Length: 124
Image 1: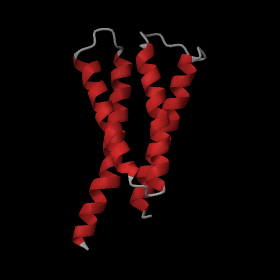
Image 2: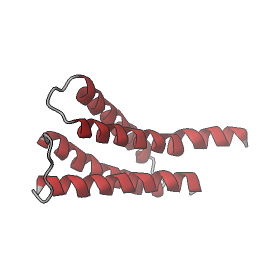
Image 3: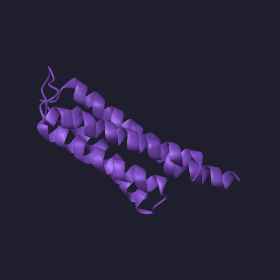
């Protein structure tokens, strides 16, 4: 596997582990926040953290399912971000920023994993 796809896989694994670690601490009451915590959002982040870890593994192993899962994760994060930013009245600013961060990282992963290799292959 080329270095670009390894970077994409590493980013997916890293963001996945970060989400599971941080979200689990909140769900278990180990970490408390001084702002309004939406339990459904923390649960979503832990679930998608696990999916991100699995997807990172699939990207690393160059499995075909990685493409669909990557696009699914990006789409879901984007939808949740839009909901939090424009429709939710109870969400903390920190949660919106965290979802923007996740969405941005997955956009970078998509560019590295799906778009850039196609562009580079056309140039060769």
